[in-house]
Length: 315
Image (cartoon, rainbow, N blue to C red; front, side):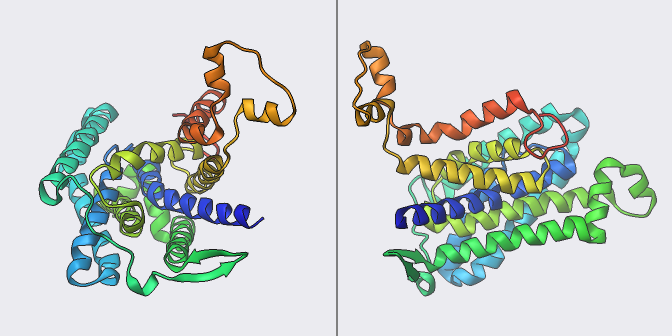
């Protein structure tokens, strides 16, 4: 029972981290219709900027300063890059962000090198918050979980309950009307893109000291973010939350299950008389399949429900 509780806690933490990272991409696509391939690069930049700032000012100032810097960088990318290629269509936008991904990765390697940097959990939070059934729950992970939940509640309230949220959503569907009412639609899009990148940067600040801050971190988490956004539904914040938690539970539990078809058959007292090629397949454990499970889910969702769990438009 204690192992199950600990696994649920870890899956919840991983799921909310995925949500914090994917919420920015969901916001950008939902409001602007742009799939930002460089989104995970802003996540990586958030971790590196937090490392650099924390070396001088400490972790807590870095927690606020780094996401603001990333949001400003994102706004500049939209203003002087995406806005210029937008008129050429979505393919041009995809290629632009694809190229930006590799540019940022190369710049990071030139400045900080190719090996992980020493970005660590702050000492003030490096202790077990409580112990349940013999399992310790770190204070920093609870801190990260709390911020993730606060981000979801804050974004949901802003987009559904405030005038600013209504203007943002209306600017996507009826830009001419919003512009005629005196609102600067390009400025709204720039702010949305900057906010989305800032959320990715905040995720990097919080995750960089636990996952490791290195140039490969964007490539490691980038694909899974797109899985979350597509499974949840393009542009759906609620869908991103559900998909993040679902994938978190799926991967965390799968890693802890060291069972294969062959081992289950042996527990039942049965033997499989099969050829060597098939024997390799039946000996594969669930933990070995854990990395590909989200992508299998993606394929199933695209076949059965192309718009995702809560999306309003097809992929």
